[in-house]
Amino acid sequence: MNPKGEEMNNKKNSDAEGYSDLESYDQERRTTSERLKNREQLYKLFNERPIPDEQLMVSLGLYTRSSALSKMLYINELYQLMLNIPGVIMEFGTWWGQNIILFENLRGIYEPFNHDRRIIGFDTFEGYPVISDKDVESGIIKKGGYTTSSGYMEYLNKLIDYHERENVLYFKRKHKLIKGDISETIPKFFEDEPHTIVALAYFDLALYEPSKVCFETIRPHLIKGSVIALDEINNPDYPGETIALKETWGLNIGKIIRSKFMPGRAYLIVD
Image (tube, rainbow, N blue to C red):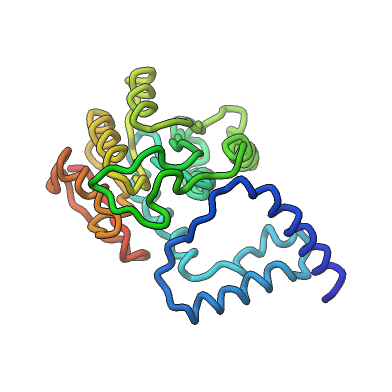
């Protein structure tokens, strides 16, 4: 191994110690064991990369699988759909926050001078507090599932701040992360900001109870053309989102369209 690769491996092992407080659980992987084994080769190549960090930042496509790229294209698809309407972008369930960063940079590309297009993310940053009997428990759908490392919200805020400074109008902060049980934080948000219009709401909670509260709470803040991204629609492994939608809005509030980039994802455009 070359010295650069050895140095990076040592750094990786050191960094891993910072994640020791995370609960271990298997990520959902809809793929074969052969492909999972092949991905280990990608991780190995990434850790042994002979590429300086500053050049890695503009060369991440070297390590981006088609499935990860399709998710980015899906986020872009959603952004384009709501370009011509006013309002904020909300994500319910941010986890590590990649979608928030993508939304921030897409704003910088498509509408850099739209200072009213705020991006607001909601998460406990401590995993699921409770699972209801309308959800299907699994290795990831469980109490504490989708937790993040200690202090991650502060780290994510710094990341978003960096990306915002790379774009114009950086002096006006246009993002916000809200920590806590969304069943409590989303009603409080609209109580404090009743004027807010929601142009795009990304549902990635996977659970029945918090999804139902969000559907009920944002309904008066939607307008014709608002886009609702449904990450687990019609998914038997995560039935809570669809049950909550049926019980609150029904399935005829607007047209539900399957993404052209991710067949398991869909979005609803409010009529």
